Length: 123
Image (cartoon, rainbow, N blue to C red; front, side, top):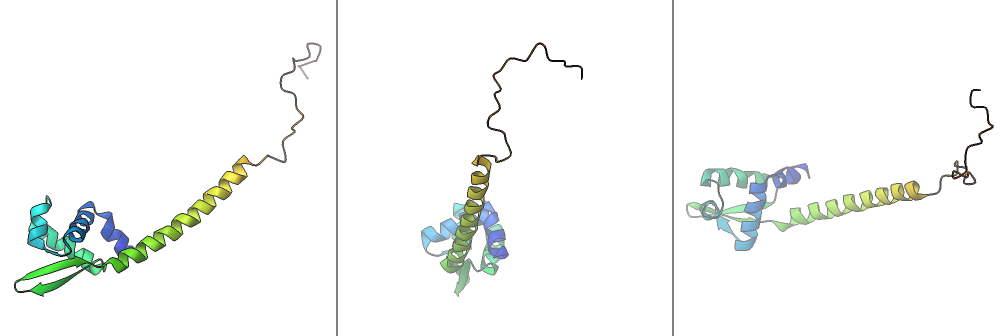
């Protein structure tokens, strides 16, 4: 999971994934014409995405054609959904506690009364 999240943390790699998803498959040369990075940088990013299990490459002659492997993205999305649901539950519990009436406060205190001028304040 950490390799997938690390790979997805880079905006260039996310753009590569988007481009591959749009094309179905593409070479590093084709991707380099669409993105503002060199072909060599694309190749390095593709290696990271391949190690994370997000893309796969196959040789066709002298070029490698890459395509997205959606299974790892699906696993990651399901994990993120579970984490989000857990946090939603925790935040709801905090909200309930914050909004609950405090049992220790005295609800009969009248704060709008005038101070007693005959009361000795020096003691």
